[in-house]
Image 1 (cartoon, one colour):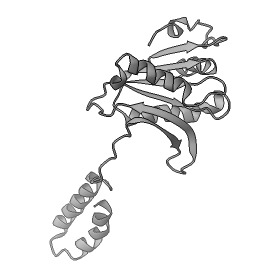
Image 2: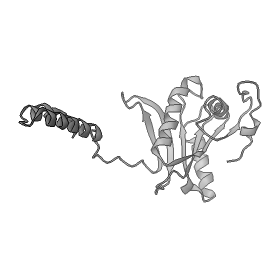
Image 3: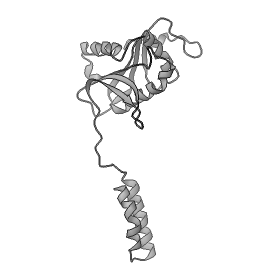
Length: 204
């Protein structure tokens, strides 16, 4: 609707026999309508995918695959942002299935499957490294936007190399998650030298 209004505006005003003051008001009205109704406003937004599935996270502008992932979401999504989110990090030589499958099995066994979205990605190399940070952060934010996630219920879990990845994500970017569990030897201290035990020992 917006492009049509903008294209028709000059023709409508040029043929308008009314006084200049009324024509000016018409111009303002056409402009207001064009700004108020964005292109595609009548198109329905596709609902997020549910169930247990694998897919590729792609750059929306180029279609380039940024990361492979596995995700499990309840079949029926709540209307409000009530769901928890568990982000899973595989160990060295792992993939998007390992820790993600473990988390899905654990919440299902405890009757909590309909309360969480569980997602795990695959690192670019054999294990997680700094090169993964940019695409990983973009993917996590996409999951949080796509599903009705409560930002107070975002958890990060990882094993081995994946556990090492949890702390470097939580401390520089605390908005990503509220809880983390890291099961790994040699987990680095956060900036400033403070021990990360408070986060590492929290049970999800």
